[in-house]
Length: 305
Image (cartoon, rainbow, N blue to C red; front, side, top):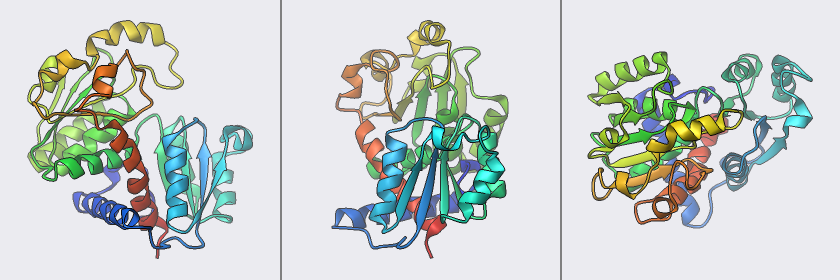
């Protein structure tokens, strides 16, 4: 494991090993403190997009494991503008032991990895969000230890979060359904890859337009914002996605013990209501906190001895 760029780069066994390591590191942390797995190691964190969870979870993960992290704002680097992506990768490789980047374009992530001589981690891109997906599955495992055969229903835009969730669910045998408006479905190549992986593990994969049909008998309902950072058609999207709100009426269509997930930040009153986000089925804050432990597993595997 030399980089962490996309869920599809890893086998089922490799993902399960990462999840087991995340559980070990969380137990160790909750028992008092983590051992200094990464003493003397430094992570450069490149941000083209602002963040709460990604920045804090990676920075705290490095500190908990005995290492250090350096935040680099959009104005300090100007990735691909002030300085080429390749040059940034080469320069940072001489200063740090790893690079985490949160970027607009996945092509920049691939270019960083191509030219860096240290591991590169995808903290988010337009195409996928693998760190989020790993933390999400880790959270589900804590609450529903037997993953095989569970059903996760994603309601909303077929975006980067939905892409990584589909691929990790398909790899691990979790049934996946997505309800998105016409024109906002998963990309065709992503859907085709998800179908292939799901067939290999015996999982079902459905792309639908009706959210009620998608969440029927679901163990987990997952939603995300309708308008992501950098998307300008926010008013149009609010109108199109209104029937896709996760509310009490939609929850009633799922299993009685359904879990509700959201990667945050949430636009409350749009994709999710306060009653659901703060209700008894919600695990969104446990999910957010688990970013720390999933990130630790990635860092320990990539930067550790």
